[in-house]
Image (cartoon, rainbow, N blue to C red):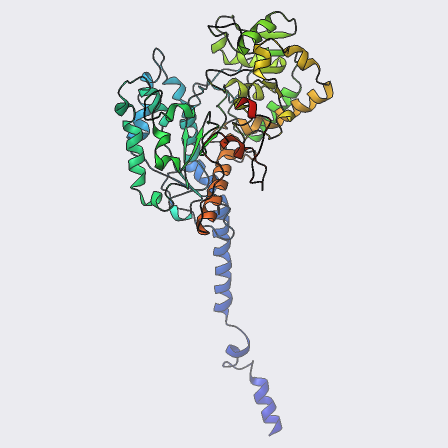
Length: 500
């Protein structure tokens, strides 16, 4: 009996019926191999999808959010872009011949707002140089967002909502109209269209952002009339985040972003080569000024800049040189030849030349804090002394300060550190080619979008806690909030109080 029992126990594993108890069948192994195989296939497709899509397809605002196996690198970075009716976008761009009286603005709209390509010159890179107009920011951002790697058609997972309204083009077409209703017709239409959307109602526009290719002053006309449209005064728009080439120090929802310059690289190598070139640049002048005179009083900063430069053997300018004002190669050549570039207020507080100077590795000299320090807080260091020189404009205008004497007092070692900081900033203030792939540097667009997403996230967290997130206020102290260090909430006296 014991022998038979042992034989019976031994046969479990050898007989045809015993295999199913101790040894998995062959179909099980085949199934597991199939699962692993397809999991690997999905993984490699998901990791390569960004590159392949940009090569083979033109992304749409309403392309499906890609399936991703494993960690989703776009979590917290998805952007939902509205597909606006053409009257808010393409129809405005088609009016390019009417944007500026006496000037055809159609050519600057070429190449997604970069303008016509420029041939290699003495002072421009061999590739990636364009004749870019300063008012093309709306086209530039729209083109980049179309190729944004984390674009989604699902607003419920979006970190922010982008409204590609060409507000600057509309303003340019209507600024001179005496009929205020006609001037405000399309901006009002845009605001009314938005507030009817379910995406808008979710947070009342607090998760939305727009880009205006002109200064805030063109969009904040009061009820009593005056300059510009009233677009940014509408309650709906006041809830959004507005990116503009010149923000107001006294509003809480507009943020300055860099003017577009002439170099739009397509790779990390392009940027590194340019930075190295600016480090080795022969700077034979102490200071340079790329600008012209203004009619009127001689007791202005600009008039004194020109007067002091004209009487100095260490200063270069082309204030009276014919044709240089419209020559990107000539402008960049002047800026690249100087240690310091003086940047007075332009037609308003800011000027495109500031970013041309940084691109040229030239240390900017400012005369008013609104020109940069309380303007481009997302893109430029809070420690303005690390990359620039500040000389109060009244000291210069009243002939109480010599620009040359001030600059010569700066030790050479400090000048070298400041220039290196300026060169380090170059990627943050330029706009790369939207078709560029596999770049690792963050350009002005990336910095801006990251800041918008961060602001929206804070507003969402506050809403979840039943409160309103307030990172700024309207009024005289608004600009101080933008200068607060991380984690600080209280504002007080500031060194810029006398100027703002």
